[in-house]
Length: 396
Image 1 (cartoon, rainbow, N blue to C red):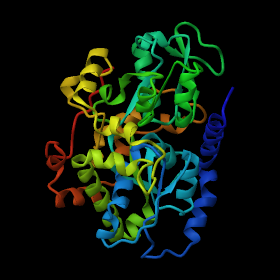
Image 2 (spheres, rainbow, N blue to C red):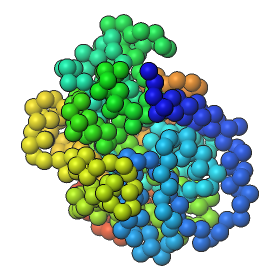
Image 3 (cartoon, rainbow, N blue to C red):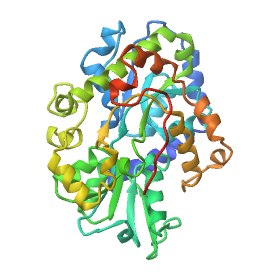
Image 4 (spheres, one colour):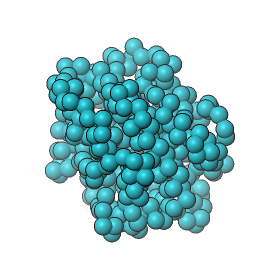
């Protein structure tokens, strides 16, 4: 039987689908535009309780916004993507993390005047399955949960399925032996659904993969960062009105977020504690144990993942979750190409019309993050080669 969370998730996708159209977004954008813009408006962060939000929460928790001379309010936790998008459109929050495909949907189907200014993290997601599933091919005839149609999770999962000769079951039909039924589900509902045998697996952001491991109800079959090397998942989205009308304010916001990523890389154990329910801020409901498994995995864990095949490319030296803020144009271009090949529910004509190179230049404003990085040692400070280009590597 569906739980309240799974019902909420279905309502959430319906709500977001309505919001991210030109007519659906317009009333909220008009409401925001009608408000007098305060040049000293504080930073108002909207987030979901997943590790994707780490830099924004660390920047708040460690006083990095204030160190930039900004006023900041306590970050607002939302339960679903439609809630966070609606609050962002209406101006109730002005800095959010969103799944990177949602930003494509928002700008080109919803005409949302906002841009990606930085990446929030890299990797940080996985395909978790029941303990009796031996490989992707074993998912044939079964159901797998995804958090959203417009998510890197759906993109990577469908690529894995195609590579293993599996198709997506149509509608609510029972999947055939060579098909997989995709079920939209709230991340909070995935672990109990797997434990109850309602689904054979799920693909989602951390720490819900770690939660299945700690609670011994499932195992990680593949890490998404081991399929698409160092991919972005969530990105930082800001209003163009702020970027053009308050460039100094916007620069300080990005500075703080970049500094938070650098700090997190050097303080992973403390970050796990800061984000947990044990911290006075209570940013998330997760335990330090579960968050530590994501942020500070042991060498033994890594060796076991290599042995099991959850990690097939150890030579990539990818972290379970890592942090670097620069939004490589090659990723945005490849994301658009991959979305064109990915099945999504509802209206998708806008995707077919998109030019990947145009989107990379139009959706993203990397000027703020470049300036921030140049002040902090550039990309080498994050263990990356100097320069603003890379080649995307996808190997299922």
